[in-house]
Amino acid sequence: MSDHHVVVVGGGFGGLQLVNGLKGAGVKITLIDRRNHHLFQPLLYQVATTILATSEIAWPIRHLYSDRPDVTTLLGDVMGVDKVAKTVTLRDGPTISYDTLVLATGATHAYFGRDDWEPVAPGLKTLEDATTIRRRVLLAFEQAETASDPAVRDALLTFVIIGAGPTGVELAGIIAELAHKTLPKEFRNIDTRKAKVMLVEAGPRVLPTFVPELSEYALKALNDLGVEVRLGKPVTQCTADGVQIGDEFVPCRTISWAAGVQASPAARWLDIPADRAGRAIVEKDLTAPGLPDVFVIGDTASVMQESGAPVPGVAPAAKQQGGYAAQVIRARLTGKTPPVFKYRHQGSLATIGRSAAIADFGRIKLKGGLAWWIWGIAHIYFLIGTRSRFAVAWSWLWIFLSGQHSARLITQRETIPDKK
Image (tube, rainbow, N blue to C red; front, side, top):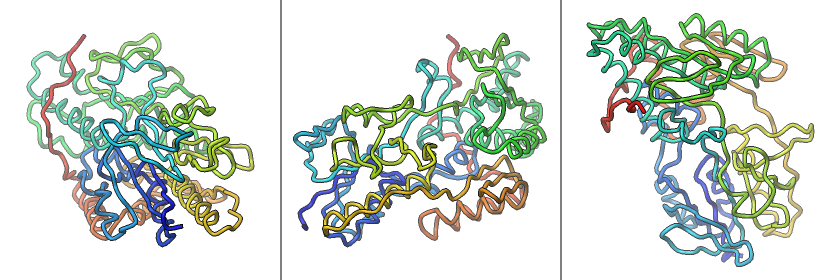
């Protein structure tokens, strides 16, 4: 079976876990991704908020598999799948045949039909997104330092984050710490402590996937950091001038989007049913309906648990699905009966700011400093390589002791988006 060809589209948590799980299986693997690196997305917001450098949370995929001759890595953008001919088509590239196909193509931002908001309200899914947000945050302070019009200065010093899930809460908390604790001594014409950080959530509470008790703690921790939390009213307009929240228009020049995600077009490629977020609805063994040789995993897939609740779109779930799909492929190649996929919830974690976090492990629920240490240890553990673990741990220790963020570099200079 050495000529069995497994094509994996997507070098995220699910895709890499599957490739790792097929080591020594006697198959040929082609791993395709539109970027040349694997990204540790849970810490992406720390690149956006000047805590970590890009190289500390991303690794070249080719390097990760340099000692795996069974793995061929291709940089390419998949445009479609021919499920009859069993081929994958790349933009400006070859057509690749497969025996088994694994789609682990992840998700991107969802603007709920308002894609025109993206230029002024970037989301946070890629390194490019993170450096764009970081650049805009830092430029806002720089431009406020030279602004002569008080109204313009106030708008520059207003930062709006839309969506109070983990990403939105983490962004808001760190931007507030940056403005109120890290930068005040560095500017002469403005008081960065007067910056307004606003977190907007259409629902009734922050971190709605956590139990109310932990949501209430997170809200209090955000308020203690100086974050203004707006609940119960959606944003109805985003422009370079600001945002419309209910009946109120808030002038601001820096907006970040953390309100929703949309799955990749994998379901459309395969012409199979999808849920409202575009995730492909898969069988219990994570294969596409009627296509036993095609697996869909991670944020691309809609997977139901035995309880009837969907498997959450988090990194541990994607890794479990990738490992399970590798088990199924191995079982099929050896004529064995594959196991049944069961999602094991390993807990939910979110950090609000320095020494403030929440953790939900089912019966055990933690908040405050202990949860923050557990959150940090867990994230360092799942990083790839000793160097990255040491670099991230050192960056966090330095910030904890000194209060200074080390990655405050403005690159690829741009201006704040022009008014329209």
